[in-house]
Image (cartoon, rainbow, N blue to C red; front, side):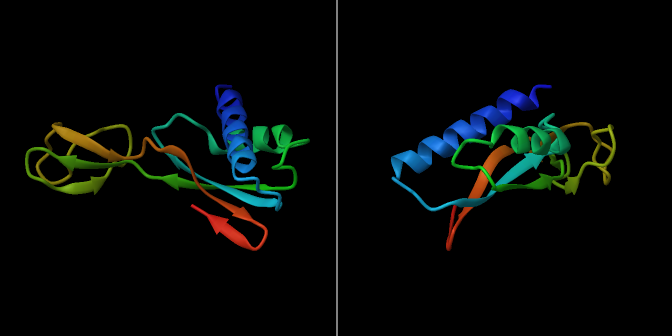
Length: 119
């Protein structure tokens, strides 16, 4: 349920940016990066986006979501790896002393506007 205010904020920020830039072309796509540890559920984000975009500058735009896997680095041996499952241990040395390096993202990566793309 926390996806509702997330999507509300995304739409608000994008619309404000469009106004600030005096952009009048139609937005075709909003691209998000969503880390698997962000607790945001992509299907819920899409559902709320479909509903909340109506009547805004994003009406008709699609939401494209890139899911970012959880990645970590071992503080013990230096191994970089993708975390599989709920256990956060280094696959090489079995250390639990790891640092999460990716997977917490929740951001607008880019917008596709008629005949252009913004990052």
